[in-house]
Length: 210
Image (cartoon, rainbow, N blue to C red):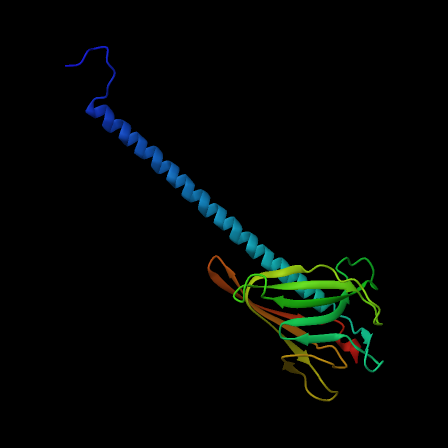
């Protein structure tokens, strides 16, 4: 027996409260799931945007490569400054400021796999003011063009000698002309998926280097 003044729940009231609590919990979990998916989607979009921005900067820098020379420290003879290897490139190009046509910089691209381990690399860019002599110049801190790379390779298309048909090369070292084009092939991971990018970059001033 209970007194009429005592508070309590009947079985029906208890079932109703449990049902309401279950509904509220379901809505909360559903909202949390949507929030997590939205956050992951935003992160994926940001990584995708970052990849496209980095690829665009890479295209702009390489396409504007100039047939500039540098004094060889060993021979004292001026030689063309364009040293291309599968995972690095040292060349002269137009400053990204685009203020003046003569605003040349020396750009150094290099793949760095030490920062995050061999399975996750980044493409770094260092720049300095271009000087044809060997006077010391301060080099900028590395800027990251591309990150989350699983692979990265450069290929070079051009003529090594006058009269010899142009061909694809894995490196472009100590040549007397710029390659006609550079292809950057890389694989980047996004949301557990690997994206393969092949960027063909014609060099505008290649013909002027002969």
